[in-house]
Every structure is written in structure tokens, then in C-alpha cells.
Length: 282
Image 1 (spheres, rainbow, N blue to C red):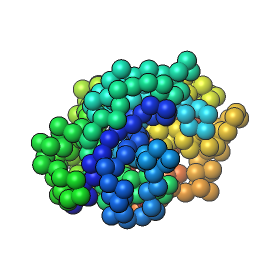
Image 2 (image 1 turned 90 degrees about the horizontal axis):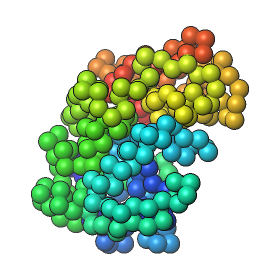
Image 3 (image 1 turned 60 degrees about the vertical axis):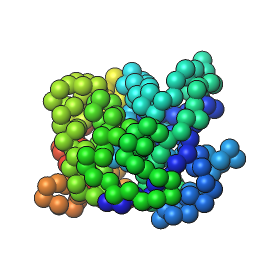
Image 4 (image 1 turned 90 degrees about the vertical axis):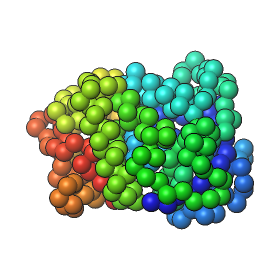
């Protein structure tokens, strides 16, 4: 699978980064023009927000709510460390990075942008990109073995990210990430011992999913959208049916909607498939 190579620098100071998104400044202004999809638009500082391919870490500030911060914070720390960003200081609310040794050089591999114009990317520290022979403005055919150089794989391997696949990711890369996910879960690394996505979570109020239970971020976001600032989880699957997420279930390649994969028994909600078996439509 061939990707565009873009060299630049990673930035977190003055932002609220989490484990699966970070700002990036391309070395060349025209570098973004090669990506398909909605145009990537740099902000006043020349930075574009990335969406890291194939992974989803716990939410730190979705609609004013967060998931258990222990694992969300560890994911961000792993991301920074893997890219070579050190001496990170946050404000008192741990919402914005006030200082860091950022603007570190590195590479991204991307083909397209998502719905909000964020380049869907594999991110690599400069040294890792150089080992792969990456050259700014060139193309690189990404093999499953190449994934080990990316921070995306590092977060999955540490068990600090869930796999969240979309239809734009080729099957061989997806299969390698799925293997890494199962290995991390079987070894009980990172968040996996606390994960309740497949076993089921009792949603007795917002704090059940913001402070206590660890679940797939996509399921968390849908619960937050439904619950709003309160209420009960009754009727959640009906809500999903009225706001469908189209998804393919592997290995059968069976297309369905998310509501058909969520089981609700009273206040207990669970995903009936493991997350690495799902491919969501863009």
C-alpha cells in the first residue's frame, strides 16, 4: 500500500493533545496538496491536526467528558515519548500543554484526509523514518513489517490504544494491527485488564463510563451523545438504530450497523464483537 511521505515537525505546546492526535507542520507548504479528501488546512501557526491511522485512545475531552484518565494520560505520554517530545508541562487542569521540548522532526505517511480535513496518518520519529529510507515528497509502499516503526503500532503494542479500523486501510496492514491487539490483550498490557467493552459495562450514570469503566472510545462517544448531561441508558440501542454507523464484521465481511452489534440487558451494555473484528465505513 503506497503512501505519500511528508517530513515536518510535531507540536504539542499550546494544544490539548491526546494519544491518537497531534499537530504537525510540514516542511513544505505544498505537501498537503497530494492528499485526497477534504483539504488539510494549516492553522495560523502552520500546524495541521493529524488523525492517527487504525488506533483510538481513551477520550480526554469529548463534549466536556473524559474516559478514565489513568489510561488516557499514559497513551499521550507514550505518544510523546515515541516521537521524542520530552519535558512536557501541563496547566493546572491538565488540559493544555504549557511547555515542552517539541517541534521535533519526523515523518508522516498519509494518503487521504478524514471528514474534518485531518490527514489520516502513520507517524514516525525522524530516526525511525530514516531507517525505512523515507524521503520527503516521495512515496513509500508500507508493508506489515514497516508498521513496527510507527507510533501507531507502539500504542497498540503497549495496550494503550484500541484498534479502530476504517475501510481505507488495506487488509494486510489491518491484519497485522489485529495480531498486535490480540497479543497485547492476551498479555494483559495497558488498559486491557480493565477493558469492559466485550464483557459488558453497567451504565448507571455518566461516572460509570467517565471515571470507572474502560470501553472502546467509539462506544463511549455514542453513549455520551445519547446520555447528554444525564438520564438513563434505556433506549440506547434504539438511538443507535436511528443514528446508524455502518460497519463490516470480519472475517465474514458481513455488513451491518453498530446497533446490531451492541447488546443491552437492563443498564448493561456490551459490544458483541472484539474491536479488531470491525471495519467502520468512513
